[in-house]
Image 1 (tube, rainbow, N blue to C red):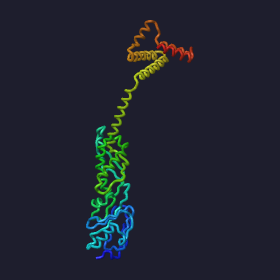
Image 2 (cartoon, rainbow, N blue to C red; image 1 turned 45 degrees about the vertical axis):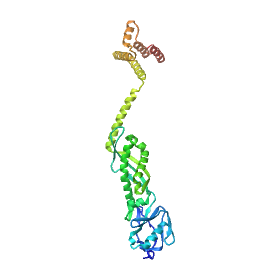
Image 3 (cartoon, rainbow, N blue to C red; image 1 turned 180 degrees about the vertical axis):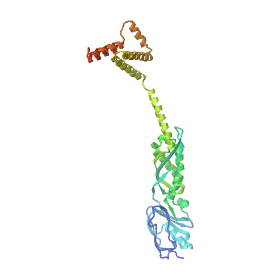
Image 4 (tube, helix red, strand yellow; image 1 turned 135 degrees about the vertical axis):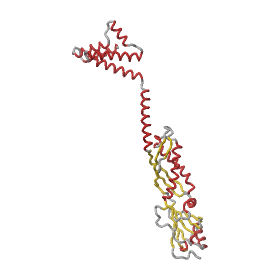
Length: 344
C-alpha cells in the first residue's frame, strides 16, 4: 500500500499554534500525505515522529523539507515506516514549543510555616512571584507527559512545577535560618537557591526553569501580631541600654545646672514662699553634693553660719533685691553674680 499516493495533504506543520498549548498532535491521517508534501518546522518549535509509541525521529531545527527529495533523519524514518505500514493509526507526528514560556505566576496556596531561628516563634509566611520554563529534553518530556495524548497545555506543566516548588519553598526557608526581619533583604538570595533546587527536582521531566523570582512576601495576621510585640519589647530594651550608656558626669552637671536655676528663682521670691524654696534647694544641693563626693553641704552651711559668714543663697538674694530696687544695673548684677558663683 502506497501511503504517498494520496491527494489530500500538502503541508505538515502546526498551523496557528494556540498560546495555551505546549504540545499538539498533527490531526490528519498520515495515509493522506502525498509524496511531495512539505514538512515545516517553525523557529521555536520541534516535530516528533512516533511509531508504536516510540520516538523514531526528532526535528528541532527550524526549516522546510520536501518528503520526496530531502534526506534528514526525520524524513528518512518517516518514509521508511510509512511505506511498510498496514495500520496508519500507529504512527503520528507531534509538534511542540521549545521556546521559553515566560511570566508564569506562582503563589503559596497556604502560608509557609517555619520557626524563627532568632526569636523562636512560629512564622506563617506567604510568598508570590513568577518563573519562566522551557522544554529541555524532548524524549524525557514525551515519556512523562505526552504518551498517547493529543495535546498538552501550558497550565498543566505550570501546575506540576508549582506543586513541586511549594514543598521546596517550605524547606528552603527553614534551612536558610533567616529571622522574619531579614527575609526581604535576602529575597534575591533565597530565589537563587530555590531556582537551583527546583531545576534539580524537575530535570527528569524534560523541563527546566530559565528564570525564577520572588516578587513579594507577607505574614499572616497571627505572625504580624507577634512581630509587633517583639518590636515593642526590642525598643524598650534599646532605650534602657541607651540610658545605661549616658555619661554620669554629664548627668551630674545637668543636675547642678538645674539646681542653680532653682536657687535663682528662689531668690526672686520674697517672703515665706521664697524662704521655703531656699530651704528646699539647700537641702537638695546638700544631698546631691554628698552623693558626688561625700561632702555634706548642710554641715558646711551650718559652720558658715556659726562663723558669721553669709551663705551663697543669702548673697544671691541680696544681690537680686538690689537689682529689683534698681540700685544696680543688669550688667552689674550679672557680673557680681558670676563672682559669687565662682566662690561657690
